[in-house]
Image 1 (cartoon, rainbow, N blue to C red):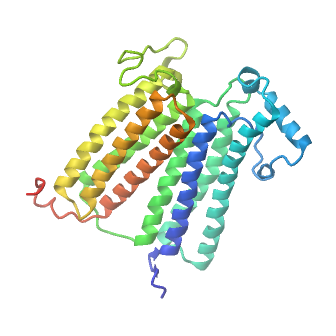
Image 2: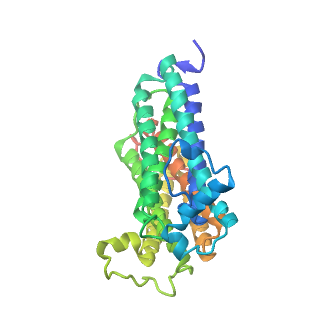
Image 3: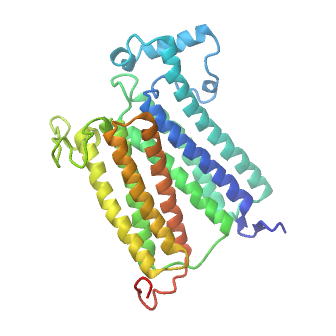
Length: 356
């Protein structure tokens, strides 16, 4: 038997899943740049197959540009844009969609091959199938998001952008988790519920912060109140509730940014407490250090967020901040996976202090 393949383990499958995760990570970063460059509405049609071919002639470029001129974003934001300027935003969106198609091929084809060869551990087949379905749904949600900005808005709806980002991050985390399962095989031991629940809550808090970041991006809230730690000299910014009601939590720039800040502060405290407790209890060798690494990543991401804000979201910092969010989430995913598979030595005897 191949030394990399056991009854419930396949490292070839794991490598494939990790490769897919890397492409999804690239997709998330390109998606952030596409948003920051205002490129997301430059392609006004959804053609999953034929859309893979960009305009190849002057007439085709003129046709694509004319379709863009028919939407509100051109009339209200980019009126007078030249063809070369249009091509600049078109290519970002085209590459974004191309990488999405690439993910579909890179996942679906090996999945079919591995199924035929019976290389995928049986318990992971349904997970891979679910990830494939989520990928297809992501394409539909992407168009649902873009369509919100083609008739009455000059950009996409923040809540739709957040759903699109959230599903991408779920797929990303799912690929990492399933890859770890394929690499290591099934493990029946489980850590105590309290510690496992804490790691799961931390993951959920990080994921929720990513969603709040999606709302900030969708509402363009990072371009206002660029001072810190206050917001235009005040802790509580003015919120326009008129005509919005509960939707202010999705659309009001001041409130959206405030929520992102406040959740970040709470997340930093929770992550730091988790790291301290993890280091003191040392559930298993390496887990204390991993808990600290997650907390350090949270602090670095928060610092990067502040820099991004006070510099009014330049392209390179905005893209780096979005990449950092995905990396923090994957670290939390690995942490949760490790905790759920650990066999703690010290829970039976209680916690101990550092170095004692």
